[in-house]
Length: 80
Image (tube, rainbow, N blue to C red; front, side, top):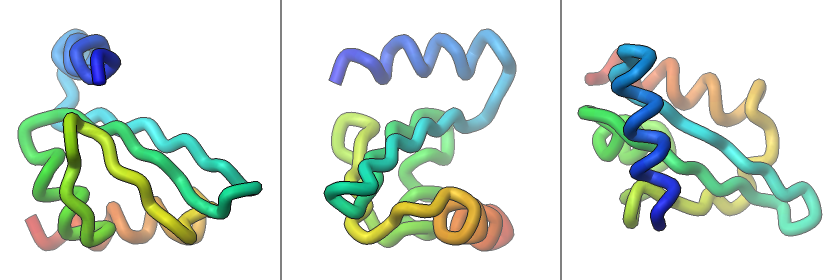
């Protein structure tokens, strides 16, 4: 996925450890995430139980950023 290169540049420019974009499709009841950074693989693995493939993973059943994505990320950051 070529978009990961642009996102990585963004992470460096704004001095972020990890940059994540979540795209939710309520009709298919899931979200795609693009995540880059030093601990991106570990963070996504702990938060969602998925392995990133080319900085991307699909999260079936995850449709709420407020109720599902953010709490999982907060919990995972405490484990890293």
